[in-house]
Length: 495
Image (tube, rainbow, N blue to C red; front, side, top):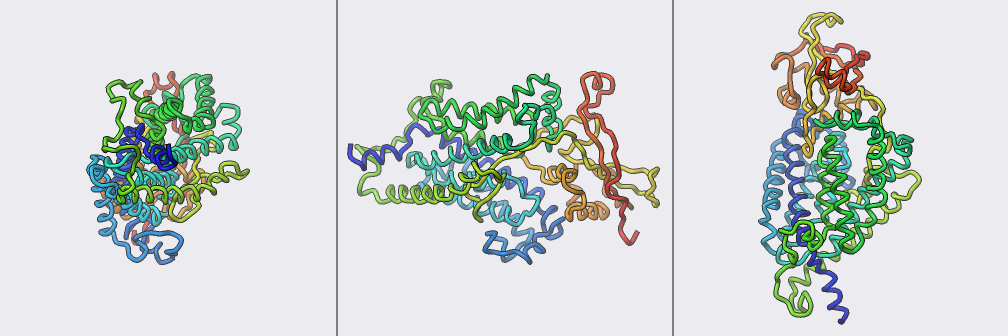
């Protein structure tokens, strides 16, 4: 076999048709959720009249550091146009329409999603400061080069997608080992299910598991994140087995909490290591040989097929770029001061990932209340604003929201860990005083039915999952202990 034949045989990953199918449609579906989440929340949070208005932010915007199509002009109407385009393109990719066309059509479709969403993230400020934003951008750029049904899945891109999963899993594992003692002594899950940012409907049941099972959870997490990722690079069927372990552990996290599209991203991306034949051995109704059916002789592409060779050149150029950019996150993985959820370039490509290096031991919630009384005394009738995902009433079952992302609720979780005296939170309180309709739509319940309260305040409360005995007596899932007033009653000057 000559060198050209060896290269073309290696380049064409004909045992990865299922992997490409899942990667392209899965990442596109996550983009759809991200654009939908932004469309429903961004204008109220960051729009022209939002809590942190983008037009004001753009006044100090350095266009060379944060690329965005909004850098010259922002309007809510333009933003909605971007989201509509993102939703339409991602829906077409989920349906597989661009994949029926030449290879450059899905390439351009994914790059358009990447560019549109990066434009949103880079003006999103604290409301878009989550690691899964970078993860989605990197995933979108990488799978853009998987091609269409007219060309075979390219091996370099599949390897680089596995490298992305490795950084995501191994980076998170290293953060934990270097983090709090609770991960090293296997007690982290004694607290995590109760104190995580947004519990799900089964989180209380997970929290009430015996402590020996929580230790097994923590030990299993270390194995899944520190050992299994290396086997993703192994030949089949080992790579597929490792991918299955990643998927199973991520599904466990999906059941136990709400982490936007983080876990679903890992599940989708892990399919890069899955082989068609290995999958067929487990799921027999999937054909054993799903290789692309382009007629060929001994090598692909043929020497005169310049369109196919252009595809090879584009894939190799993108691969070289991603390999070069990998130096910084690779070095970070083994650095003494490992960075968590960090980008090393302004395009959000080849990033560092990781989360929950330490686990919060108690759950403190910020309770926001308002009153119609003239005097905001303690005996006034204070009514609580209810959030969609943040814990509130003691008897309410937490809802499953992931992969949808409730940005306001997530930032409310961070307030007790930082400070309530943040610009966006005071802006939020002022919007409540004005009974701003767009802001109130972010909430589950407005206790004043659109009427303007005279005063609002913020206080803290300790939230703990009830034991089984407590639940039988009270039917409450949360035991709530009021703590203290954090922001004294504030009102509008014209009241």
